[in-house]
Length: 426
Image (tube, rainbow, N blue to C red; front, side, top):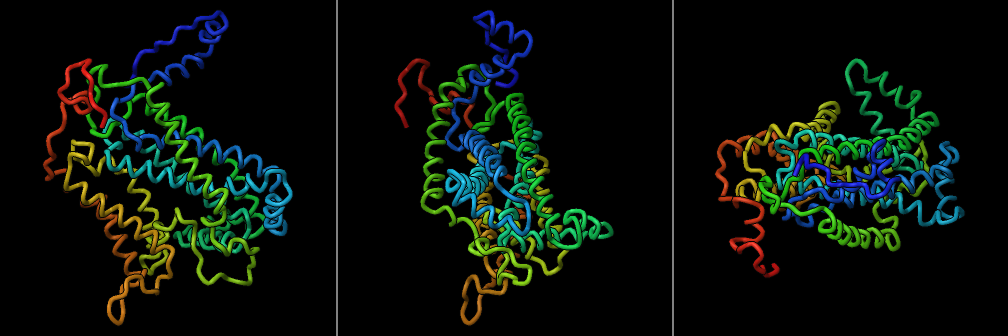
């Protein structure tokens, strides 16, 4: 439960001396004994997986920075040299590239779980907002990192994205030139992006620390959304959830290892393995897969500024979600109508990702002699995306009647069995 008193007692003179001056050992011990809801499932293991991903990205990134050359004439060759000549570079560089995709895969699972179980609702609004800030900084870090290999997609992606800032009224041109370090993507741009890409992961690490602190202050949500009432509703984080997290991390590492050793380049665009050429534009400029839904939203309207505002709004709406969903019941397990709308929302997110990868004028769904283009389909997905947050959730909060919920976490887990009685495994 939130705000539980410390149970740590130093046993040795050295630990007692340290504890009186800097209670860092106490913090670690309290973290391990933190009382967590006893009904947490495997959807709640992505916090540990994300922590591992962040460590992998920082460690591999620092090593790569020792060998990378932030120069437009040498950047592409330096990445190839890392993979071919630097000891274990064949492992570290793909680990960093694949790790970015694994990081976003885990964070999307983490966010969808929070949406389904209502983890953004009171008193966890600030916890959710900090998580959204982490996601925003992750997006910035990933974009900056995508430019560093200086392939065709790196160069033209940087050109397109920085061009968006030029559409901002009044200050757009000045802002764009400040980002570029000049009037076009070049050496100054690459140096700035490299410096920021190196800095931002440490900002993410600091935000993660704040996120964990907020989590331990307000306590964890759980699949049924019922607050812990007694000590029997909780279990110590260690060993119950450390073992569960370790098993989930092991499974996640198998997926990570599969892509790392067998398909290290599958998640990147083929054109990015061609050195950047300002005189040769790729036929279809697309971002990495984890940006594709937002890219589809950007292209859902013909006006450039309107598309930018829609894309920004798609992220901004997440920050105010705790106040848009006004229903008192947190978990959608007990909200059957909301559950169906959420499943449609999930499908629409996949459709937007599919549309982001396709050429807008191409046919996505054939219908007779014509069909629905990716452009029209992305418009449908965009409308539902915003309608879900701005219309559907607020209305359901007022009209939906939930099904009956358990009185406590213990009763939900153990049923009516008397305390101490054996309960068959599910």
